[in-house]
Length: 335
Image 1 (tube, rainbow, N blue to C red):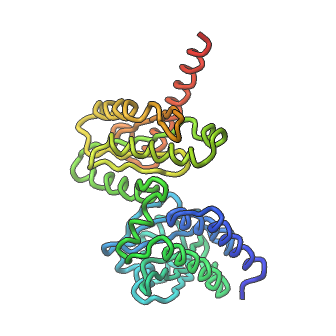
Image 2: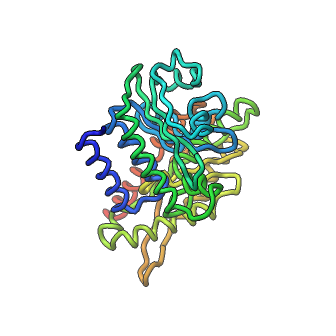
Image 3: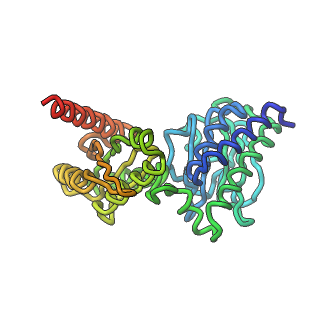
């Protein structure tokens, strides 16, 4: 049986979810993060079944860099868990024919527990805890993981009273802005990178940071800050093309995947279009607030054809743009 300390940790997680009013994507991200400490795992992931694939919708630890990854449901322990609805455990993936050994080696896991996630009496995904060591988990860990899966199932229930077809939408979109969330953004970025190796078409990645959100929250309250975030999201969506993906990664961070692009210069044109569309006054409750963003861009494959490096380049350029905007504001005040 789980210890009293471990049960208290589960209650703390449940309380944190209730107090924060988290949306489904945030609940899943919180659960996989807390799984690491709760059962001493090296990684955790929530995979959702979609169109024959298992999609990494939330990931932490050694699984964190693989957020958005898609693996075939067939011939995997996760897929078998979805089909059987049973808790499954692999004590050593190197000697277990049920697992996708190539995927396990890519992530670096040697043992795992896979717990079914049920929604509306149907298994829609799994909660998986993983370790870099063989035979790392015990029966007690299965019980704790089961309690966490119940929390996710409850979040799924309250996120949608519709049917399971709506579940993936709720799990992959930001609750405040209805933009794609981080997991869906990474899923689509991985697809674009894979497709680029076949058709050779370039793509653009933009990292977008909303300026001044903390000051808005501190001065006028989170209600105004949330309204400003929704307005930034609306302006970004309006200025994007149907083929682009606009996402809120969390807090004041947004991102955009531009596809297709004809040449790197068209990415610069898109950045200028976004600045023109987003920057400007926003009227809320009879008061005008200035909205602004800082944007950094990277081009696939010109800057990199590696996902992590591509995001790092765009992020670094975004911070450079933010610093430049701060200097311009300081200089204008000084003069």
